[in-house]
Length: 107
Image (cartoon, rainbow, N blue to C red; front, side, top):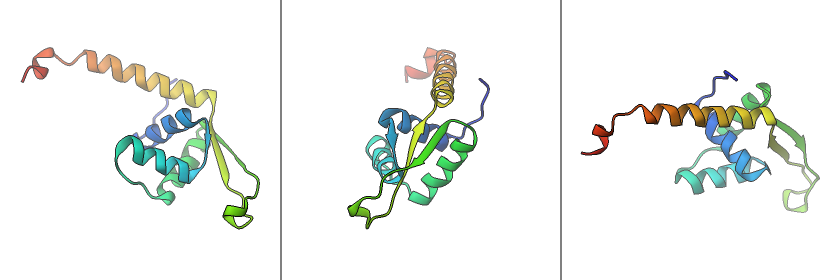
């Protein structure tokens, strides 16, 4: 699979693979936990829409909850195509890391 993904798209896709089924606020929490940085919900939603358009993510509306005043939240899940894209990116990165001469690490 030869799919172009930006770094933020890749990170959010990996978070979806970690959490299986999740929504924007949980993605922001996991991003903070994993990277030690915050990310805005609008930024997350822009990326989720791009991933969905590429067929790497699907979404559906969850049930209304009292904690959200009866509103529903959109739940996102990575697709098989999303898993394959993440796996392919990881393999390519591993191959590239192997090409770095050991000399650079002895400093």
